[in-house]
Every structure is written in structure tokens, then in C-alpha cells.
Length: 397
Image 1 (tube, rainbow, N blue to C red):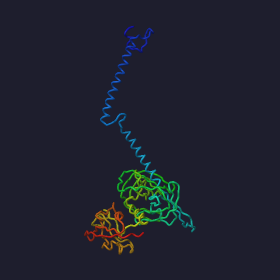
Image 2 (image 1 turned 135 degrees about the vertical axis):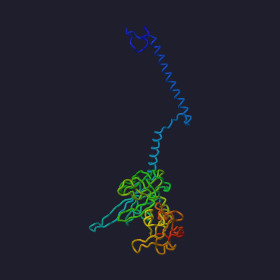
Image 3 (image 1 turned 180 degrees about the vertical axis):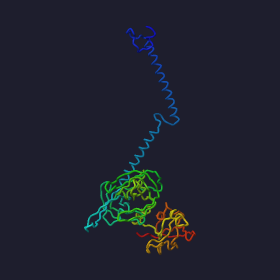
Image 4 (image 1 turned 90 degrees about the horizontal axis):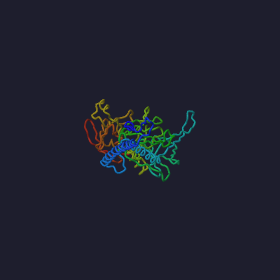
């Protein structure tokens, strides 16, 4: 055999003969060298990765966690938190049905129904909802998540906030855990749970805290409007029927009460911070009523634009002014403000050293106190600043 026939063991012999033994020897040597090279590369890779694993503190059998894996795990953890929080809180969320008799266009008595949401505070049947959900003289029925229904009575309505407390006769009910709205951060995930459209009970929507300390004028049925301040803004979908339902953090704690949506917009909803109403809830637990403090002034919140256009000496505070009718006096006779010498055109700029401004209006500051508390007001009067002590009365509903 010539050398040309041995250079390629896969070539066929011109004479049709099979390759000789020398061809197999060369093939074996070639494969041995190839496998040896692969082994060397694998060994170097193992040494390198083992050394890297040692430097990163990885134990035997552990795998380096790459970015994609972390992202996937984060998504799974967030989804799990949403699921757990929703399942836990939904047990204590109730649907509220309203039934009342009204006269129709022809003077006939017809039955009118409505719906809202609430959540259970105590195992013996204290339930929180919005005041506008139970504003009418009507028959109220509460439906729990396990399919039971109870007749409900309105125990208290808050004279300052869109808050009411109902009572049902029951025991062993699941309850919510109250969190802290002060600890909420912009961009934080929150969950809204409610009886959407008065039809889809315990609907869960997810969003973020879009803003805090919002002020709005909310309009309800019957042409009634109410000024609300210090609200949480969220893009978690809040629909009619969600009113009174909980706004929940991922720890499963209630941080707000869903109360309003912006008309003509998508996913701009508002909730009353839970910290604002904790005193009211405590008051109901202790006395069966919501007791709120009263200062006794009629005022206009000062903005920078209002201060500039009216050349006011302060760009923040509560400007004491009368209303449009003779009955709407600037200072109520005999009220705490009257006793303290506050008069028309005074500006209250702070309460106990805490500013009264657009983000912290007078009503929000007052909500931190109870009737009988004494507070120190900072007042601008006739261009002079003075401090006055005021003992707060109880606001009548």
C-alpha cells in the first residue's frame, strides 16, 4: 500500500481493497488526541468555575444565580405576595346591599337597591365602610365571603370623613389587620378589594400608590358633595361598588378605605388613609360613637396663588372668612375659636407647631386630636403673629 492511501482512512481504495491496519492506528491516535484536548478544556473550565464558585461563596452543587433567574424569582415572589394578601383579606371583606322605598315619577312607591363594600374589624361584627354607602335611611344587609347574610345597623357616621361603622349580630367572624398609611411610599404595590359594580363581589385589582396627600371634592348621589383631604391616590382599579372596601399592602394589612374615583379618567382612584380614621375606629370601639373635635371657624385653605392674588402675609394656613349667607359666620359664637379670641380675617398657620398647608390642611391636623384636647394655634392677626391655646369641643353630627 502506498502512503497516499493511508492519509485518509475514510477514502476508498482505487483497487477496491479495504484499508490496512495502519489506517486504524492513525485513526485511534487522532481520536485519543481529540478526547485529550476536550478533557483538558473541561478540566480548565471546572477549575475556573470551582475557583469562581469558591470566591462567590457557593457550596457544592449550587449554581450561580444569573439575572434572568433573579427576575423570574422576584416576579414569583411578588405574585405570591399578592395572592396571599388577597386571600387573607378577602375573607373579611363584605358586600353591603341597600334597599329603600322611593316614589317614582308617577308617585308610586318602588323599591330601590344599591351596593357597596365594607370590611370586618372585630369578630363580633363591627364593619367599616364609606359614609356615602349608608347615607340614606334604608335597610342594610351584609353578605360575608362564606355566603352568609346578616341584617346590619348603622352604628356611627363620621362628621368629618367619608366613614361609617356598621354592626351585625355575629361571632367568630374573620377580621382584617390594620397597617400604617404613613409608611406607604410612592410606587409601592397596593391591592383594592371590593364589590365591583355592586355585582362582582370581592373583585381584586392591583396597582401602585400614585401619590399621597391629595385633596378632592367628591360628589355622590342626591347632589351631595364632600371635601376630602390627605387622600392616597392609586391606579388600582376602583369601580362603583368598591366604595368602602379596603386598600391593602402586600403584607395583607389595610392601609386605606377606597372612597372615590376621578371622572373622565382611567385608574385614578382615591382612598382615605387608615391612620386618619384609627382614632374614629377607637372611638366607636370605646363609646359606640365617632367623636370628632371642633374648632369653630369657617375658613378658606390658602394656596400660593390665593396668597399672591390677595396679598396675604402667609402663603399657607387657614384664612378665617364668613360664607355667602348671614348664617355662615367666620367664627361660631361660643366656640373654642371664639373663646380664644380668633376673629374674621385671621390666618391659622400651625397647630402645635405643625404647619397647616396644602398637604396638611386644618381638618387633617384636627383629626389627630379628640374632643377635650388643648392645642396651641399659631395665628396671624393684623400682621402680628401670636400663640393661643384652644380646648377643642365635640363636633355634632
